[in-house]
Structures are given as C-alpha cells and as structure tokens.
Amino acid sequence: MKIGAIFSDYDGTLSPAEVPLSESRVPKDVEEALLEIAASVPVAIVTSKDAGFVRPRTRFASAWACASGLDIVLADGRVGQAPEMSARLPDGLAYAKGLVKPGMAIETKRDSGGRLLGFSLDWRRSAPPSREAVASAKRTLAGLGLAVVHDPAMPYLDVFGARPDKGRAVAALKRLLGVRRGVLFLGDSLHDNPAFGEADIGLCVDHGQGLERLTCGYVVESGDLGRLLHLVAGNGLELDLRTLKRRPPARGAQEI
Image (cartoon, rainbow, N blue to C red):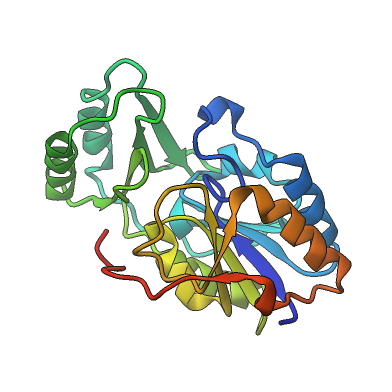
C-alpha cells in the first residue's frame, strides 16, 4: 500500500505508556522516521492530550486533533469547528480532584485559548483504584452530563465536556489536509477504534495492553515501530502489508 498520510495516537502509541507525563517523549528512532515521512506526506496526531502538551513533543506533525478531536489545529493556522462545552465540566473537575490519592494526577485538557475541554484522572504512578471506585466515578461524572471514556486496559480515565470521537477527527483531518487514500492510523487502545475504522489501514502498537477488543487489522510490537517506519520512509512510502502481523477479529469492540 502506498502511504498517503500517517495519523497517530500519542500516549502509548508513539510515546511509552508507562512513563510519567513529565517524561513523555517520542523515541528518537520513531521521531526521525516520522520527520523523514513528513517531508513527503502529512503526519497528524489524534490524541486525548491537549495541544499545549502534545505539539512541542511532535515537531514532525502538520496537524493535531487534540482532546480526542474536540480541538483541531493545523500548522498553517487553520482550525476545526469548536463544539460547545458542558457547563458542568468544572463541577466534574472539582469532583475528580477530590478522588486524587498519593501518586495520582489530574491532567486538564485545554484549547489554545485556555478553554477547558476535559481532564484525565491518571493513576499510572500509583496503586490502581478498585473496579468499584472507577465505576462509581464514571457514574457520577456521567450523571453530570459529561462524556466519560475509559479503557480498562489503561491506567487513566478521560472526561470531556462534549462527546469525543477520534473517527470524526480523522475524517475532518482528511478533508482539511486533502488526503483521499492511503491513510495509516497508529493506535493502541479502545479509544482508537473509531479512528481505525476511518483509516485505510489500522495498525496497533502492542506494549502488552491486550488487543482482544481492538478493531485494527494489523499489530506491531512497540520496540519495532521505529524500524517499520524507517522501512516505509526508505521504500518510497510503500508499506508491504505481507510483512505485518495480522490480528484476529475483535470481540466486544464497542464496549468502552
């Protein structure tokens, strides 16, 4: 397949999932390959992170769909249509702050104007909360009319002031960037399933998270991603699908 664009999740896909947010970086081999690819075709980031966090860490990208598509910005200054945020989002943030235990963190998500779009309750550096505690938090936040997104395989819970949709974000980026075919999407979680569906090829980066409910067609080990991207860059942007590991059909893919 001839690659026409690469769209990618960030946390756990390009950047290691287990590191503190302050140390989050794209590995050098992956970054160098994406810089080379970006000289020929668009590279865009589709992430639950906000622009202030992810843009300085992805200098190879020409577009960013942040907060899972609620904030779309292009390097040339164009922006996507901004949705209306729930008035209860600050209440949800205040509630979540009351749940924080030692080692947990609250990560707010804002657009370039500082407007609050959402937040994450992150426990990757602490003992994980019980299933009951997570379920209770999800019920309370959803009861406020907020969009709650949680993949049980991931050590965080995302909350947004409007319904996020990475698939819608990929479709918008294709229009804005003028990409018609050959879109490769890189992801690693249930949150990425809608984006896999909008791409021509969905490739999951496997870092041990469990892939049973993902709808990507192919899998690459996280340590092999840089090598694969360098092969694409050095082969005229041709991706030989026969060299990729296929995965079985997903089960219960929509249950997030």
